[in-house]
Figure 1: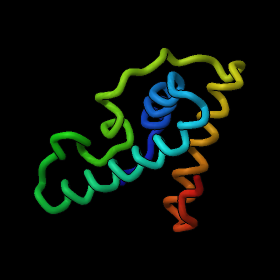
Figure 2: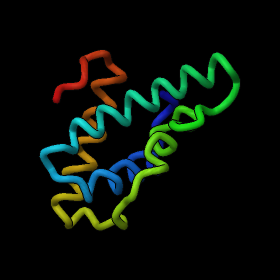
Figure 3: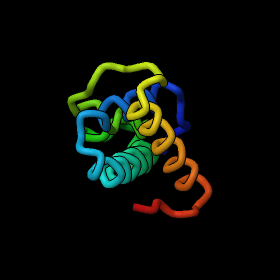
Length: 99
């Protein structure tokens, strides 16, 4: 997966928000795996993956519906941000992605 930017997290969070809370973590793990696979595809072929994009997390969720961004006063929104940051940190440090 390519380096993470603020916009990547915001896009993933906006895609997670309309999902039931009980399915968000599994969806997030799928998005990270898709971004990772797309990045490996890009490294080998020099092209973006047709379905998952260029290896960024934002590109991996580009085809999904999303809610508007909210403020951090919205607890659900803030918790989704924390979940995404924790999952990416676990992925980057090799600690695994707990469901």
